[in-house]
Length: 114
Image (tube, rainbow, N blue to C red; front, side, top):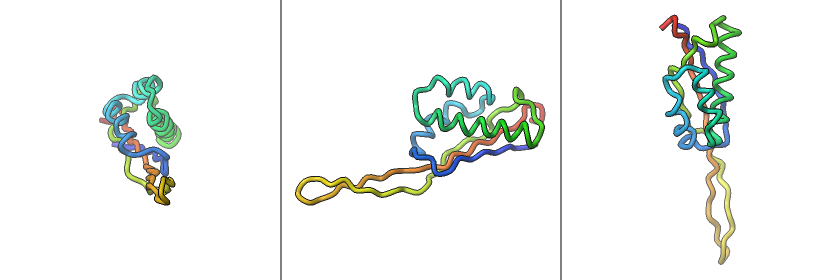
């Protein structure tokens, strides 16, 4: 069983926000997932759609798989680095701002093999 992977690293969105979108598309076919993501308002939907398109292109080019046979077996968002910034506030103090990043991974498999 061939597993095709695609990754997007250092994405400027928190893993928690992306995981909400990932839960919607797990186990669906690649085409159905792209259609669902197209109509979702979240920023993570656009980022995830880009990774799925990359995985589909990898499957077609590298493994000669059919696009309509592909489905998502695994998708997850891991924690990346956290950029730490500070916001000045009154009385000479500062509040910290955590700018989170994530690494998105999508794995596809062909239905005929499974």
